[in-house]
Each structure stands twice: as C-alpha cells, then as structure tokens.
Length: 310
Image (cartoon, rainbow, N blue to C red; front, side):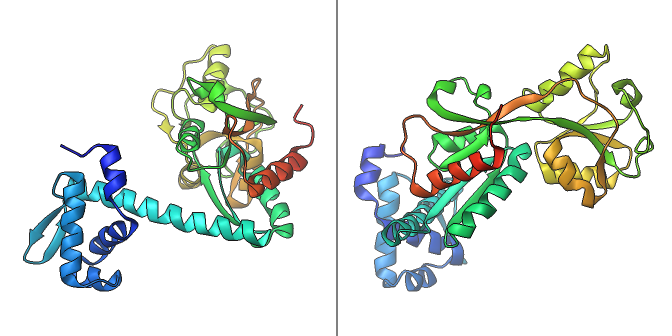
C-alpha cells in the first residue's frame, strides 16, 4: 500500500528527489551518487529511505543497474515536475527582488494565439527579462492546468467546465471563424460557396463538445446537411495545417486570425460565409487568487490588444 500523503510530506526531501532523477538519467547508483554529490553507500541508503517512505519498490535491480518499474516511472515524473517548479520559484523570486522580469505561464486556445503573441511582444519591450511559458490546448485542458496551479492565466472559455464559478474571467474578444483549405483545393478560386458545395470533401474538425465543433455542427444542421461522418478530429493547430498542406482536398474551420496567419503556408480561406461565431474567449485565472506582477502586466497588454471586447 502507498503511504499516506502526510507521511510522504514529512519523510521525503528534495535531495532524494534529485537522486531519483539522476537514477533515471544514468541507470547507475554510482553515477547517480556522483551527480548529487553523495557517496554510493549514502545513495543506497537514500534509495532505501525513498522506497520505505512510499511503501513499495520503485526500481528493479538488474545486472545492468537499476530500472524503474511502473510506480518508479510515475514517481520520477513527479520528481521532475517538483524540481522544475522549484527552478521556476527561484526565477520568480529573483524577478520580484529585482523589481523586474520574473516568470509567467499562460495557456491559450488556438484562436487567441495571434493576440497572445502580439501582447507578449509589447510586454517584453518593457520587461525584456520576463520568462514566459506558453501552452496551447483546448479550453478543458487549460482549465485543468489552472486548477493545478500550472498556469497563471489562460485565454479560453469556462463554459466547458462543470464549475465555471471557480474562475475569474475578463472577456477579451468574440471569435470569427473561416473555412480554409489548401490554395490548390478545387474550389479555392470560387467566388461564392455554400456548405453543400463542400459536403463530399474531407473535413478536419475539432473534437466533440468543443466550442468550434459545436459551431460547425450547428452550421450543418441549419443547412439541412449531415455532419461529416469520417472527419479527422484534432485540437492541434499544427496538425490541422499540416493535414491541409498534405491533401488539397481537405477543408477545416479555423479562427479568422489563425487563418490569416496561415496564408504564407499555402492555406487560405474559402469563399464561404459562416452564419455563426464561436463563443467569445476570456482571460481566465483562479477565482480570488492574487495575480503575480507579470500576470497583471500581461493582462494589461492583452486589454490594449483587443480594445473594447464588445
């Protein structure tokens, strides 16, 4: 049985977690001991203490060295996260002490990437020592990272959450959508299209229950058409653009800002006007959680970028 959380907190030390990472890197207790500057007997004792604290074996002893088992790989993954978090903590503290710089982790849905990039460019003109981590993903996954404290802010939609009141939201912008395709698509030069014209083509769509997917489903329903049965589903901007480049027969829906940015990649909007807009996105943070100075500065830069959201 795995030990209770209170026991793990009281018994584990950061140096022991460093040893786990070193063991994973080298597979050798001797080399791991050298990396963390302890003797090999000390490393052996430390590993025994770690496994005793967790109440289970984490490594398999072989003639080739130490191989982490499934539980060991799980522990090592979290040891790396803790080590990374400590590095980020030090970085942010230095920024606070120096009165500038610092660190911010921000998430974004695909359609807000151009807005975020422009806002960060303005911010870094006045904060050149600011360290930034950007995570692009779906709203649901970004909210999960907000919950875990992995992100300071996220540009996304809280409507996908079962508890939207757990977040503070600053509305940013409504999102116009465009149907796009390879510039070599057979209908790329058409002056006017309807959904019926694209009914037999291969579609790349967002996963089920995502806001952009719901918009497209509504468009097909209002047009009296069946939704594409064999579409490729992805939430990845890069995958979508690559798939469009690969096959000129494919079409997809992208936020207008992304569609415009993709023109240089041989991707262009088709002459099809969608009747619906995707749900507006907001700047999201944990409810009643104080923001760091870099997060507040980014919030201001984003507001300058969108002006009046309505």
